[in-house]
Length: 119
Image (cartoon, rainbow, N blue to C red; front, side, top):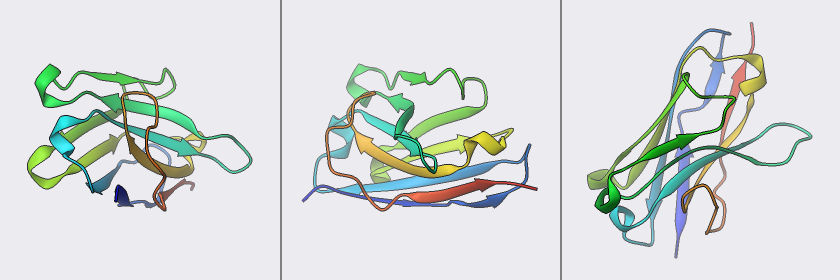
């Protein structure tokens, strides 16, 4: 079955960097688009970034709140999608999730990885 395992979260100071990873299984990873989402305490889950499949150029798109600071990428040989987060802000604190689909989640959710930005 489709599964996502997110990792790499942690505590980081404002202005710091972190890279989170998501290993996907249960489908042909290189044939699908992938996206990252996040959910802050008391808020709804929101889209962070998306990347299309290799056959259509691995194009990317980002939420306005993270443009210029976050970078999504993928390693199709490792069935893994990454989110590099730079210049982190306290408002980036959330649980981060991945899913397949470009900017629209198409599968069930994994456990996510907690990112906390605090001094």
